[in-house]
Image (cartoon, rainbow, N blue to C red; front, side, top):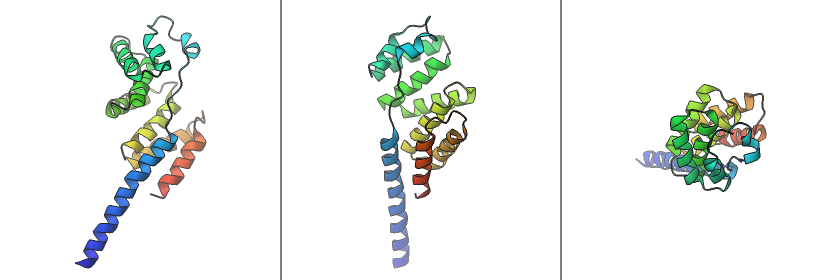
Length: 161
């Protein structure tokens, strides 16, 4: 009986430690994806700029609603990506942000490395370590080398969990 109790206590300790560690890693590495209107202007001249301006001002909930409305009528990777980033930055709808990132990943957009990065971080936040590792491995293998060092450091930390 005592050995069973000790075993259960160890399992509980390990599982609760994993949760704390993934949240800590998420918090340590997460930062908002930057948006500068100058960078975006060439690709979105015909679109309503209000959601992008809201995103740049860090009014992420306003931006998310604007991107969602635009994305419903005009399916563009820029709109979908910034919709997902707005959701992620606001912290109000991680499941929808993850869905948008998964859809974008299947479409192989110019945001592929960023999608791997933010999907990996969001999966950590959701405590899905195995899938997070897969995303960070894809990121490291991507030729763009976006956030490679950070992804490698996270993978090393995750190996200890």
